[in-house]
Length: 333
Image (cartoon, rainbow, N blue to C red):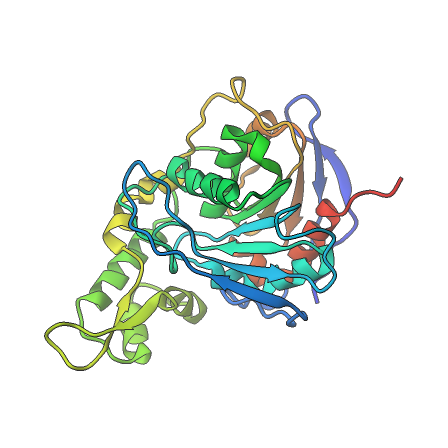
């Protein structure tokens, strides 16, 4: 079991903004499914069906994880959990249940637009993604909301916090920073592999896995990507085939957008509420050079380092759980 080491105080490069750095021993990587003991939860599953246009928010599909001993109702002090690119709400199911149990707060695990069971839309950038989450918060009447996001979800959380700070109490950004940076070339490679599978009438996941092997050597990453497949019945065939439910053409065009950040001038906009940044020490997504920029956009930020790669939550779930619980637990007087 990974445990957080002693916290050490250090300072950001900009005006002494406080950082907390913690080193955690890595657990055995289990990306992308979290190997966590199930908590005793009552989970509600909610669906929306909606066609999306460029100028309208997408109605997001979600899972609601309720704690056995809630400190408030579902609408007060909830936590929204946002997945990364090619992910879905099911990736965050186990960690959501554990955090709901530990914090006594309801957790909404969302499918972002063009992912999971949420509707597809031609526009896929952080302004649109944050707009969907803003709409979700307002439609559900949520108050004092915490937003946790990994990778794409992290930049979505940051964008929402900066654009509509009144909607957000605090954020947890996992392995991403508010800077423009090209995303890894692996993602474009994954799209090519998934498109090749879609062009073939695959009926078994083992066949799809074999086709994906030239594009990704890691079995766990392939399983993560193939988790986006579902069975459909083509018009010209009586036998169902496996296809990707995510819109590959839309996401392929959006890859450059996923590296960008919509806000460029931290002197013009900032989030003056608590923010926790969690980074994997084996990942390149949050370089030390980005810390001053984080401090300018998020002057009350804390930093926790975990001995993991980019897939921090799945590689070191216990270390991540401890970091979030510590951050979100009020200090005793």
